[in-house]
Image (cartoon, rainbow, N blue to C red; front, side):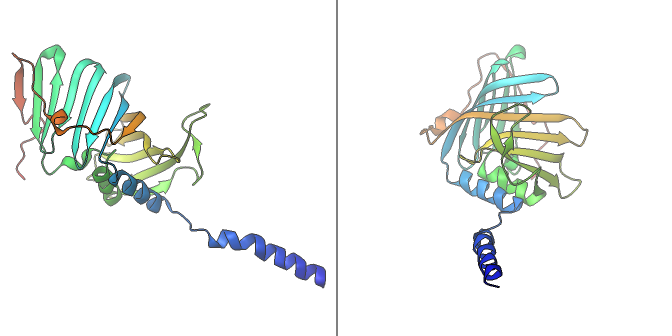
Length: 223
C-alpha cells in the first residue's frame, strides 16, 4: 500500500507543474506579438518580397504608429513610402510616381502593431503544426513559431496568412499570404534593428525631377 501511495505522490508532484503552466493559445500568442510591436518606436530591417517568380529586395524603415518606407536594391532605386496618409510608389524605369490617399486603410502594414491588431480583428489564429518551434522551411536550422490565420469573412483580400515568428525576439520572420485568386505573396524580414532614432523626415519622399505623377491609382478615397 505504501508503494502505491509513494507512486501517487510522485505522479501528483510531476503533474502539478504542468497544471500550473499557463496554456498560451494561438490567439493569445498573436496578441503577445502585437503587444511587443507596440513597444517599438522604430525599426529597420532587410526585406525580401516574393510574388510569383519575382523577388524584390530592399530595406524597410518603420516608425510608430504608421510611417513606412521601403527602398529597393532590386529593382534598383524603386521606393514605397507611406507617411500616414499618402502612399507613394516610385517606379524608376518608367520615371513614374504613383500616389494614393489611404488615410483610413493604413492598417495594411502587417509587420506593425496596428497591422497585427487588424489581423487579430479580421482573422482567426491557430497554430499551424504545434505550439512548439518548427523549422522555418525544410532543412532549415532556424526555428519559428508558426501561426495560420484564416479570414473571418469573404471581404478579406487574403484567404489565409501564415506567420512565422522568431520565438526569442517575437519579431515576424516571414509572412505568407494566399489571395482570393490563389496567388501567393511572401515577405521575409531579417536583420531587424529596433529604436534606431529614425527621423520623421525619412518618410518624406521627393520624386526626382521630370517624373510623371499619377494620383489615386488604386481607388478614389471617398472616406
